[in-house]
View (tube, one colour):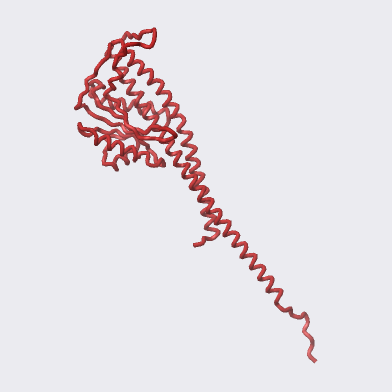
Length: 302
């Protein structure tokens, strides 16, 4: 059904407004991703220092083997979004968490959710988080969130060693060629390789420490947990904005294609109306030419 010129003009104005909104969202996503990406790089450098501390501690102590309690509390921290417009970002991660939980033999782990949208996705998978936290509104808020999660993990251990608690981080990380993939990373118990001593130290300066070994190990573990949680949160925010950016680029392309179609229809309808008006003028002019002229004066009757 052909649309009128006024309807097509309104449609064109609406699409132009939508394109402006989509372009703004795309720009904001690109701008917001940059600080989180810098935060992820910074915490990665800090984390490497912590890992070197573990290696030095293991070298001086000859290595340790922490006992793992199979009945310890299990916790999965799921990093999602609090806003939409990012495709199936939360749904794909919720499916992975569901699979991970089903694979656990020692009961169902407890869930700690980051983001209201992530909570809805977990609920759709019949998963009920015990608590839902707000994701960071800026890169400065990542430290606040990481500190809150570390405090909750500490409370979960009930004052015991943090190495006796099972904690898994579930988040979306960047893949190759601009892709993203949901992953799970075991945080606690610690990987055995962290506390295994090496036969050689790759430096002429041998490591040493003056504080008590128990206090040093506890500090290293807490710093490792904080850095890991911080990095997972930063990586989740980077991929969230990247997902939103990709979706907005697709939306912008679709809107541009639709604008092109409407613009073509608008030109066609406008040209048709102009042609009809010209034809009316020509037909009216031809009708006036064929009409006989009346004499100005009527002759007098004799």
